[in-house]
Length: 167
Image 1 (spheres, rainbow, N blue to C red):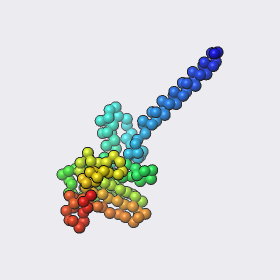
Image 2 (cartoon, rainbow, N blue to C red):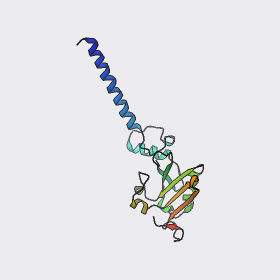
Image 3 (cartoon, one colour):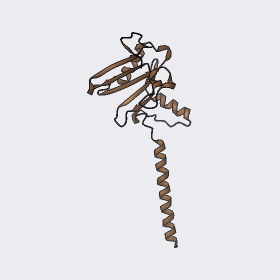
Image 4 (tube, helix red, strand yellow):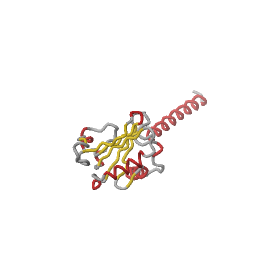
C-alpha cells in the first residue's frame, strides 16, 4: 500500500475512535432522568461523596425537610419530588406545608411530592415498592387537568382514621 492509503486509513480509524470516545463521555455525563437540567449541580465534584453533597445542596430544602431527588414521570416533563422530613418533625404538618409551598407554590399545571422520614426508603424510581409505600408519610398531588389538589397523610402522621391512609 502506498503512504496515502495508509495515512487515510489511519485518519479514518482515529476519527472513528474519537467519535466513540466522545459518545461514551456524553452518555456517562447525562443524568439518569433524576434531576431536571435546570436543577442539576453547576460545579463538578472530585469524589462521589462531593458529587452527592453538591447535588443535595442544589435541590430545594427548608426547615425540617429537604428534597432528596426529583424523578421525571416517563418523558412527560412532569416530576415527582421525593422529600425527606426530619424524623423529629414527622407529625408537624407545618413542615409538610412549607415544603409544598416552596416546591409547588408556582406550579400552574402539575406538582407531586412524596414524603418519607427515612432516606433509605426513598425510591430511585417513580413507582415505589410495597415496602417504600408502607413507610411513606404523606403525598401531595396537584393536577389542574384532573382538578385535583390534595394531601394524603399516613396514619402515623395523622392518627384520625377518617383522614389518613395506611399506604
